[in-house]
Image 1 (cartoon, helix red, strand yellow):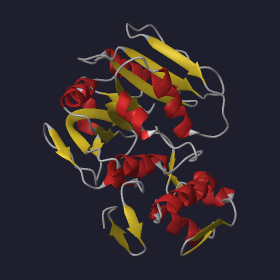
Image 2 (cartoon, helix red, strand yellow; image 1 turned 90 degrees about the horizontal axis):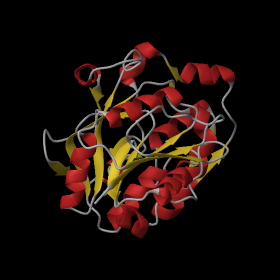
Image 3 (tube, helix red, strand yellow; image 1 turned 135 degrees about the vertical axis):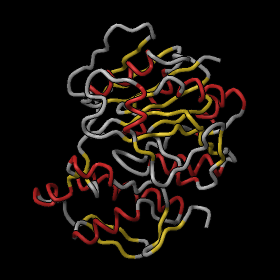
Length: 302
């Protein structure tokens, strides 16, 4: 079975170049790279032995669900590896995901390590990325082999893999989720509902390149509110509850019971206050990993 890597990009050419470099160094390079390009100006890819197809997708905002579905539809091979454009796959990442997919039909997550502001900004050595990359504080990976994760909320879409037939059977990402937020949590829930195991693959490491971030992500508040409503209507629980609570505290949303309303967009001052400075990069949170009720964490299975 061949493998297609799918990535989506919007105005992050430098990150894309490092992703391609990681694939070039792979012990098991993909049979093709599909790039869904939502950038203002078309991206270009330097010379590489990997077959590359760039698909221009003109869209407003960040239609993540639709873009990933588009990439999967263009893929030619039986195994799909999705990498966000800011991920650098290390040399064993693709090969270990492929090995796991050959052995079992499952939803696989790669081990993402978070890089600092000065890492992978030019030429890099894998040992340095491993030295500086920080593991996720909640998602734990085995030192080798795979570990089954029963909390479907811990699926995240930075770096994952599954068989193409399984992706099709699941219906891909739900394109009712438009823009940013909750489309991957919904995908993980639907995979679990279909009986698909979520497996964390040890040593399948992808390093996440640093970029400007906001905590909470106030720049996406309108998308998050809209998508949270879609999720709640399907699953009768709220996703991203930590972010919603932060938005409520800021007066951006009104959130009571089953009702969530956007009150206003953030001011410039609120945007600036939410921006994570480079010195604080290692403290960045991630509100997509668990489902919460107010005041305590709640896994999706409770």
